[in-house]
Length: 375
Ligand code: F6R
Ligand code: MG
Ligand code: MG
Image (cartoon, rainbow, N blue to C red; front, side, top):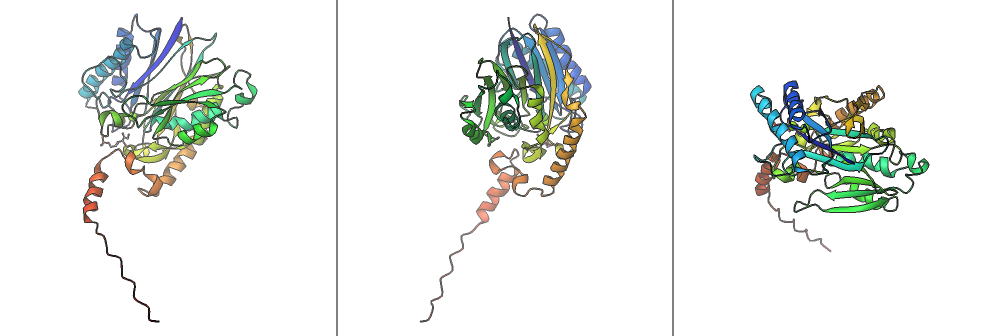
């Protein structure tokens, strides 16, 4: 029996701005999945990070199954109705179309899915980030799966020394899925050359080169590309299988201690440090900082254990302090230079009209004629 893990997440409205969903909305989503998922799902877990609700589901239907996607879509619709009743801000924000068409990909919600034969024990991590973009996972994944400075298992774990295959997507291409597969360690520099650019090249999946098994799945949705205008940052989710033939939990978590700078933050248009937080943490300072939560589970014959909230550990308090300092430091320079994203990535159109208006006011000054020098 193959088990499928599906996370589908959406922002369907929040309290106090783009901060956090209400308990009633979360309960509605949970109840919908509980009642309607009977017979389809083996298990599920609903959680929130910032203003996003993530539904983790286990089943045997394989990835991109219309019934599973519809279930999540309908749960978000039910939640949206409550969000509207309560007057939450941005109610239904990520449900970009009125009708469901078989797969939530391209409709607004973010999706990460994996189908596999369960190992005798199957630990995995579920990540959810808010106020940032899918490329926020590029650096942590590179460090966890390709860098022996971070992952001792690449040197010490016999099943890992062959390395991993990265599938990377060009998320700027909107006509279809433009992907490339590159092997670490041979193509390390090529992988780094792509992953440098978080806005454009995004790790979509990672596979073990010794067994071919999938280790990681990341949501690669670009809401901006789907809607053609700003609808909120993509706020990505990710699944990572850990231990044995994959990096250990701690090796996957360690890169998050960097609290690296990512795109997102206020109005999806700035750079801020990615702060690891416990689940159900909202956002605050400058609509951020960008946050990431991580829950550890084991799945056995499709049944989930209770989650362990790994970023709730005291170790991460120090990282959070450092992230707060980094956030305030970059905010000191306001709109200037790298504090704000480049023109092409700005999520709000206001500046476009300012620049268009100013463009007309520019004039070309004739070059001054050189004064002849007497000889
Ligand atoms: C970023 C985000 C927020 C909003 C900001 C303005 O992803 O969600 O920073 O962009 O609060 O929101 P609106 O335009 O809804 O007033
Ligand atoms: Mg939002
Ligand atoms: Mg969000």
